[in-house]
Length: 202
Image (tube, one colour):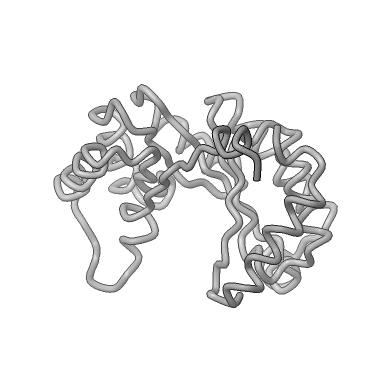
């Protein structure tokens, strides 16, 4: 890697303690506790705080909104499925944020397409693109995750990633949702995407 390429690399810390972390048994938090953690994350200069899943419950919505109202340095993010009601709820919750992000996701693996969503590949791409475009109408900072990416066919995954980038996603997360991939295998997947998604550097 050249010196110029090294200089252009920007490592962004994304913390999901308040959303994914809270799913761990015994880790449920009230709003005051979530605010305390959010303040600590901001003090540690964490770039993005995933504050919750706004549509999940009134409590989750209120927590995201409270964090968005107080945190001024870190980006405050809400998770949303690729559904209009989720994205609208996320947008409403992060509205007070100085820097807000909506993180939309859509399952892409064959097992999820067949049994969870019951959708064809073309429909998955359409859902993902429409979700990103809707989120983009509320905020310029939109993250997309292809759920169960590590079990998704690499060529189809590359197609989805290219489509959501074209639709306006500013960050793409590649999750190993069920802990399926070995480290070397996951590294190979990232290398494959970098080589096969033409617009990956947009």
